[in-house]
Length: 482
Image 1: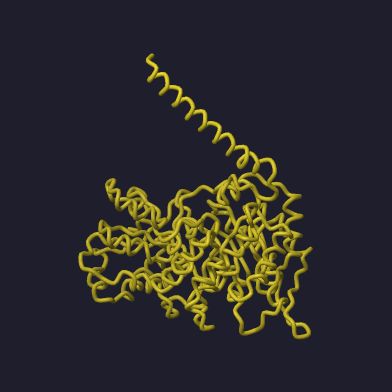
Image 2: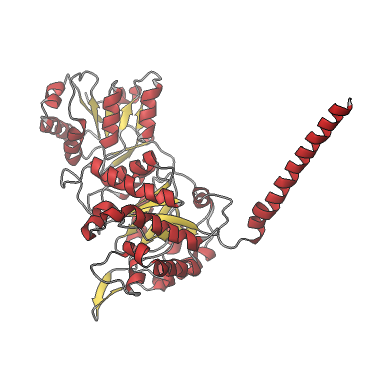
C-alpha cells in the first residue's frame, strides 16, 4: 500500500470512529437517560403505541377549573389561552400533578362556527395554537398533549343546515392550527352525530398527520342525539381511521359503562372514556355535580375490563377525580389491547358482522324499477319507498346496483335523503370511480361495496380510504331476495 493510500485509509478510519463516538455520546445522553431517569410516561413510544399496551390517564374539565379562577358566563374559556395564559397553564399543571399522563388542550369549542358567536372567529388559529402550545410547555418531555375538538353545535342536514362541506372546512382550519402547535393527537369529542364526526375525521385525515381520537356523547336511551348506536359509532370511526374511539360527557360513569361495553364488542382499536362527574344541579346559585371523586373512581375497573386504555373525566371533574382514577389504574393491571375480529358494514343506526352468517339482501337495480330516471330527475322518494318495501319483506341489507345507471345525478342529495329513512346497511355496486368516491365520502356509515373491480387498484384505494368493506359477489348472489 502506498503512503497516499495508507493516509486515506487512516483518514477514513478516523471518520468512522468519530461517527461511532458521536452516536455513543448521543445514545447515553438522550435515549439511555430517558430510559433510566425519566419519570412519568416514557416517550420512547408514541401515544398510539402506548395505549395499545397499557392504560394512560387523561385529565378532567377545564371549564369548571377556569370558572373557579374568574371565568364568567358569556365568556368563552378558550379565549383565555390568549388573554390569561398563565391561568390556563396553572390548570394544566394541576392535572399533571394529579396524575394525568395526557393533558388535553383548552380548545374544545375552538372552531370558527362556535367562536363567531363571540366575535372571535378571526382568532380561531391563534386560540387553538396557543391552547396546545401552553399544554406542551407544561407537559414537557414526560407527558402527551391531546387537542380537544368539539362539535359545531349545529344540526347536520337534512334536519338542519350544516353541510358536510361546511363542517369539513371548519374542522380543517382547527386541526391545521393544532398540528402546527405540535399536539400528539386530536380528540374529536362529545359529538352527537356520526355524519358530523365523519366530516371531522376526514378533515384531520386528509390535511394533517395527527393521530385521531373520536368520542361521542349519548342520551338516556343509549344512543346519540341523532340516533347512532355505540357500536355504529365505534365501527364507522375506526374504519375511517380513528386510533381510539369511545364516549365522553353524557350523564356520568354509570351510564357510559354500558355504552363502552357495547363499543368493546366491535372495537378494533382501544377505547377512551371521559364521563361527566355525575348529573349537574344548581345549589345556592352554583352548579355542582352529584358524583363524588371516590364514586367516580370505582367505575375504573369496569371501563378497563371493557377495552378502555385512555381514561379521564369531562364536565365537573377536577384534579381530585383524576387522582382517584390514577389510584384505581395503578391497582388494576391490564394487558395489551386485543382487537375484535369481524367484517362489518353499518348504516348510521344499525350494523352487521358479515362473517357471522348470511343476511338477506334487498336489490334495487335498473331491472326492478327505472332507477336511472328516478335518480336523474331527483325522485329519491321513489327509491326510498322501494327500499322500505324490501325491508318489509325481510331485507337486512339494501343493495344499490348502479352499474347500468349512466346519467349523472346528485349523489350527495340522494344519500342525504336515503340515509334518513333507510336504517339497514347498504352495499353499493358500481364500476364508476367518481360515483364510488362521492357515495363513500358522504354516506354516514360504513358501506359495503360489491367486489367487481377485477383488481383495479384505484377503485380499491378509494374503498380503503373511506373505510368501506368489500363484499364478494358470491355472498351477494347467495343472499339476494328472489
